[in-house]
Length: 464
Image 1 (cartoon, rainbow, N blue to C red):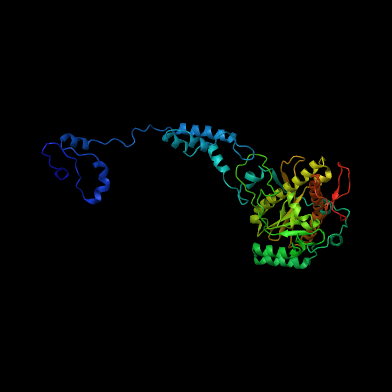
Image 2 (cartoon, helix red, strand yellow):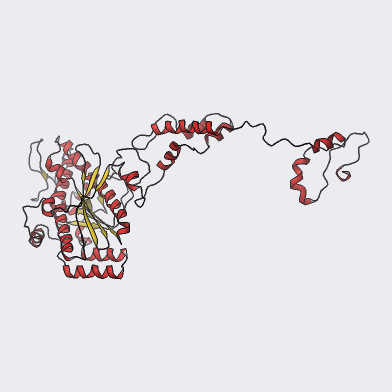
């Protein structure tokens, strides 16, 4: 101990001690040398006594009590979440903790991660859902009221599209379609070539991009871009518009996601980009009215409105569920916005939902898995209140089988006719109804056929 002591001063009092030690012991000994060392024997005995346990003055915690507290807090939060996922109440939990003057130990307890079941459910509710999730139907589709029903029964396309007044033979119907709506998307392909190409792609193990490219070229063509420029003084005509992987994340002007019917367990942003979708061209309106359509319904790429057909591609059956979810989400959002447009027009005219109006509320979809395809139709569950929708199968087939390839071509042609003749003209009439609802509206591009305010048919000045 001699090297740690200094001589006593002349007055006999001890001076503060300085530890003389190698430099590598500075860190470990420094905290023990913060007080002066004594030269008495009592100081030696005190150094040899066992030290007190660190933080021995802190009260012991009770894990069970903390768990019960979290259960009470989280169960209260669960009851303050509205159907839209918004918290109600005067002060959020985070603000109340920050603004209340409490001891630091209490603050630490409030920040302890919850261990109860309700706490875990609350964290799950903050997770973002994806269409590839195994629980996507339970976490997203069901809360939004979207039901997928695979009946397994193939429908009669002519009856389902309500085109019994047209020729029974698909080729004769195609001639009628071309006469009514002359454009470039009508399909009259070489079925043998189509059948041979799909068999070759299947044998060679082609990837999704190759199936996608072939289908866009031979099955889902587009009209020329210049034919649908809304600002040009082009003639009024009905045209379909094909959009590829178009992103329109709600909410945007006149474009909304459907409301959830029951509480959500995951967050979903409705940020979708369908592989292919068909819309109506703004050329359905006179040129002076085209720029005003966006005030009444959503307009895509300044040239298209009111989608009626969505297509998704996948390489094989392993990802078919993902394609089905994508089509269900895209169809539900398109149908809901069409539903809103019709409902607004009916309210403005003070009319109720007739059977004809209800039958117009449809959105079609096609899913591909290599050469296999399925045609879907999505319809609302109830009227006049929106409580979700049901997507059901209409037909299915395999492009490697000639008869199934012919059926696919027929279904697409019938779908385009329905989109222009029934869906399109109904959407256009609803837009005119919204315009007429303002008594000071400019009617220069609108012609009112019937002056009866309870039964008004509104069309532009060209014959429909």
